[in-house]
Figure 1: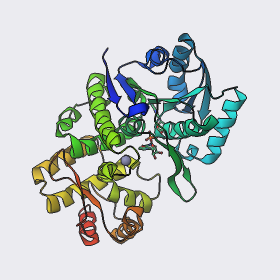
Figure 2: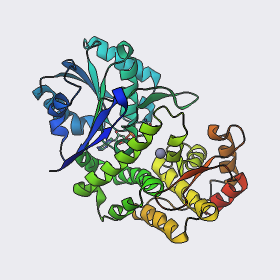
Figure 3: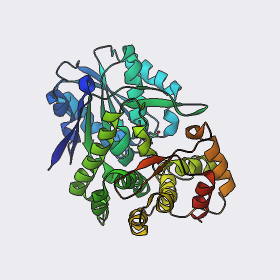
Amino acid sequence: MQSTIVPVPLGERAYNVLIGETILPQLGEKIAAEPGLEKLGKRCAVITDSHVAPLYSGPAMASLKAAGYEPTLITVPAGETSKALSMVERVCDAMIAAGLDRSSWIVALGGGVVGDLAGFVASIYYRGIPFVQVPTTVISQVDSAVGGKTGVNAKGGKNLIGAFHQPRFVLVDVVTLASLPPREFNEGVAEIIKHAAIADRDLFAPLASPNLQNDSATLVSVIRRNVEIKAGIVCQDEHETKGLRALLNFGHTVGHAIENVAGYGRFLHGEAVSLGLVAAGQLSVAKAGLTPEENQTILSALAHYRLPLTLPPDLPTSALVDALRKDKKFAQGQVRFVLCPKLGEAFVSKDVTFEEIRAAIEALR
Ligand SMILES: NC(=O)c1ccc[n+]([C@@H]2O[C@H](COP(=O)([O-])OP(=O)(O)OC[C@H]3O[C@@H](n4cnc5c(N)ncnc54)[C@H](O)[C@@H]3O)[C@@H](O)[C@H]2O)c1
Ligand SMILES: [Zn+2]
């Protein structure tokens, strides 16, 4: 059984990410042994959702109790609709009713929805208490659990209400990914393919594993590398003021437009990103010198995970381009588009035109 640690060196907000196989049953002892967490109070809330609770709250709760903690389980309905202020209030009320106070802390057990919600609650409960991330989806393990962005959705848009609040520890058990529906595992891999394209071409090789979802030894090294990439960017640009985090938007410009036009629910986020990566790859060949062979490496990886490569005819290019124009990233009319000049590198380009993006979308037919 292997495990590995990725440090996130953020000065006084530094923390470790522990990644391993079947380590969820050691959650309590790992928290107790973590440097800097000795002073955590006994009481904590384990916040999870209705899909994850029956699968993983048992071992999580048992291990916390075995380590001497007094956990209270709070389960929210699974799904994006739980990322709402009304749910923040319900969770806070449940914590107050359970007697949790400023010496208490939170465990976020689940995907990005639970992590964003529980992290936000931790940022405001008694004006801020510690929290631990235990991500159980690909997206949360390679992306949302590290970086400290927390929050919920507003009626007027996604993730508009939130706070930066870094976790104090992240425990990633890659074996939890085995219970994900394959479509949800695969959409998460789209984000790994994005990381491979912008930061580490060596990641493409392990992605060729015939059954990555159940190949936990390979998953440990793949997730580790992704956490290193995310942590590296976060440490250089913690509060997203230097534009570095923008590189993580590779494939997301067109991806977001597709999500907006198709309506949430038709494509999973990673599926829309897959189409966005195809468009961004094509523009990278045309504008940044990416070779067609390198672009094919991206396309083959997406295809291996049965991610979409072509747009359905009922999503008109004109509607997608209109959605792009409304994107807040292009507020001043200037397009900032992430391009990949060669596998493992990316930069933000200001000379991609709407016309060129339109042509790249057209090429998705
Ligand atoms: N904070 C950040 O930096 C950041 C980054 C990326 C995404 N996000 C947010 O993350 C959210 C998406 O995250 P997600 O894709 O993890 O969604 P999610 O949390 O909704 O999880 C997807 C589904 O899988 C279920 N699930 C979770 N773990 C499981 C497991 N091990 N086995 C079986 N089912 C399981 C969940 O109940 C849910 O139904 C979005 O709200 C997005 O805005 C945040
Ligand atoms: Zn994404």
